[in-house]
Amino acid sequence: MIFLTGSLVMLWFVILSGLTATSPLSQTYFLRADTHGITNSRPISQWTYFSVCGDGNTDCGPKYPALPAGYAWSGNPSGAPAELVGDYGGGTTSFSYWYMWRFGWVFFLIALFFEVVAFFSSFLAPCSRLGSAISGLIALSALVFLTVAVSLMTATFVKMRNAFLADGRDASLGRYAFGFSWGAWAALLISTILFCLGRRSTKEDGAPRRTWGRRRASTRSQKSYEGRRVKEEYP
Image (tube, rainbow, N blue to C red; front, top):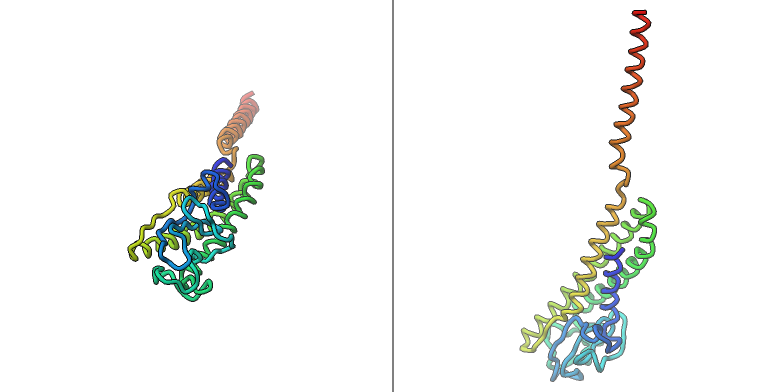
C-alpha cells in the first residue's frame, strides 16, 4: 500500500505539471527546447501534460487534453524541425508524433484510474487473501497501462529532443517528469508483486505442525491397539 501510494503521488505530479508554479510542478516538464525563431513560438518551450509553457513553466498556453506536440508554434511554421511538422493539429504536428503522444496521454489517465481503484481496494488486502488477489489484479491492470504510457512518453520526447538537436537547437529531457513517471512505474511494479505474494496462505508454516500432531496421535492410537492385542493373546 505504501508503494502504491508513492506511485500515485508521483503520477499526480506528472499530470498536474504546468498547472501551477508551485515546486516541484514548476520543474516538471517532459522536454525543454530552444524554439526561438519558429513562427509564433516562445524563445524557450517546455512540454507539460496539459500545455506548452515557457521557461520555468510560466507563460503557459491553453490547456488541452491530448495536446498536439506541435502546439509550441502555429500551423505551417517556418524554422521548426521538419520531422516534427505535418498536417495534424492544424498543420503543427506530424503523423507519428500526433498519435504517439495522444495514445501516451490517454494511457496515463487509464493507468491513473486503475491505480486509484487499486488504492481503495488495497484496504481489503490485510483482511484476506481474496482482498490481496483483487488488489493485485487491479494493480496489474494499472501496471500494464502505465507501462504503455511511459514507454510512449519516452519514445515521443526522446525523438523530439533528437530532432531539435539535429536541427542545431538546444534541447533536454525533463528530469522531474521522467523521474516521476518511471518512479511511479517502479513503485507500482513492486506493489503489484507484493499484493500477489499476499495471496499465499498465512497458515503454511503451521501446516507441518498440524500434520505432525495428527501423525503423533495416530501413532499413539496404533500403539494402544497393539498393547490391547498383546494382553488378549497372553493373559
